Amino acid sequence: MSFFYQGNLLLAAMIFALGAFGVLWKQNAIAVFLCLELMLNACNLAFVTLAQAQGHPDGFAIFIFVVTVAAAEAGIGLALFIKVFHEREHIDADRMIMLRD
Image (cartoon, rainbow, N blue to C red; front, side, top):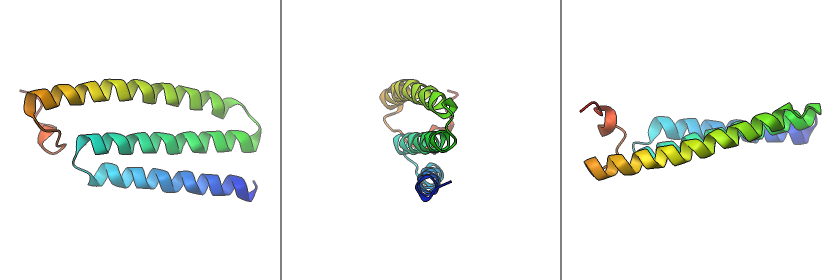
């Protein structure tokens, strides 16, 4: 594997770690949501890099699938955030634990 592919995989690992840190550290639900999207994009970069390095089109198919899931997640997640904000007037992840009532 060439240096280019190794650099891309290292970049994907750093982006994924940054997203994971953001998910664990942030309290605002929208920021957590954006960090999850960052983690999905890091996985996409890794899939495409490995597919390019090995010459298989499978990574590109997984890339399309992950992008589709991320788009659906964005639409549904933002709709839920808007609904929670209208009912509770906050989007604090720590305070949203009690959504049963």
